[in-house]
Length: 341
Image (cartoon, rainbow, N blue to C red):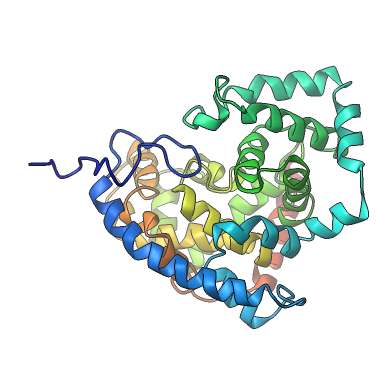
């Protein structure tokens, strides 16, 4: 008789569709049950998206498009839709040949090149497509995108964390130039100064999250304060890696669908949903190490793997979260941080 967690080997491979090796503790029985239900949803969404994309104005801003994106972009349309809704397609069309030129120039910058090379082997060691022995090996594409972007955006250059984001973009687009322009959309427009040398935007947003938790889940804010716990210790990777290696792949991609369309407030919705849903569990923590362990634990398991239900919850559980509220909180905390420096 098969053990409860044993892989249904004929049905679920040990490597997922994106090339990631499933961990030893992977719950194959639960995943098979979830996946069979999710495939039905994906099939239904794919039909709706195919009809929508037949129109020339398919992904212009509208209530309908927002609803479609929140319910998930099918993988076969994801690259195309991301390119349009992020503005990356328009930038690429307006700058023919630009990517190749910044790549060629970036390769002459030995300092930039060395910084990028240092992180190549650290990027997704659990993904077979990034192994040196892979054919083709995506490390080459990753190197090119990061070097080109580092030269393109000299105020940022290369910063740790960008390798994971660029790597995910390459897995989705399977195209260097598109990955470059999507990276530019994220770092240049969607995420406010997360990767600047001072990382002021990242620090600001961690403070903003802390204040939102104080407003919406005060008991958890009190727990953090009582234990002298800074938010950066438990959520910095959520922000800088946009939940890569934190949440399951398909859940991250569903988050990014909304991130490209609705902007960076989606990160707060995800964070608040995790904290609110696991409020009772987090409040069991008795000390500093306990809190750290519990924050790691809430990013694993069935709640976050059921990506379709999870994504519906992020627009309900945190309650109202207006752009103006986030803008005001950002202005307040950014001003405080700049005064401290």
